[in-house]
Image 1 (cartoon, rainbow, N blue to C red):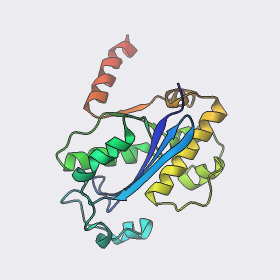
Image 2: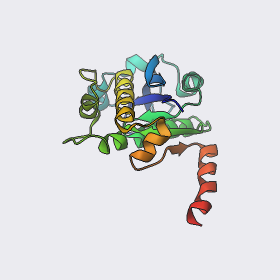
Image 3: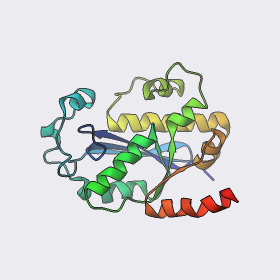
Image 4: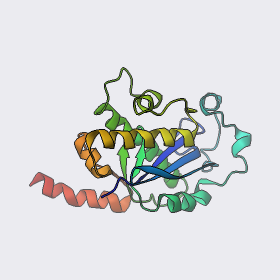
Length: 204
């Protein structure tokens, strides 16, 4: 199978996972970037306050997101872009947590998706003093990007996955996950049900 996936990155308005205020998406087909998208998001009500600390990190202010589409209003566009792909994110637990929490805060079902963590991949691919996104991306030959811009971070994540897959000779995201010591993660009710079905076999 070809190396097809969508890299994703969220920035948040505050320290709650539901407070997604921007998203970056980068689509990869056969190991090459073929499309990019990114936009601002108004977080779910109750999670929409913007902390000064977060603004210092990503530059997004309350005024920037005041008229942005809400999480509920933009979710279909996000899923349309992803189109069922495996997601890739650097420190994927954070980004999948944002996806899950923002859906829960908006009374929406969390979409069922598979994902790969480029942080875990980087740790099994490179020998670095740090595996933060800028450092790991530099090891993959992707330098001088605007860290904490969601689209730029998604592009950096995509570069790490593509470079690591080439280095390991992995044909697709699932194989890359296996080679680097893990498996694709699962999010959403259908995916979690699938995981539950696998557990008895694994224990047999």
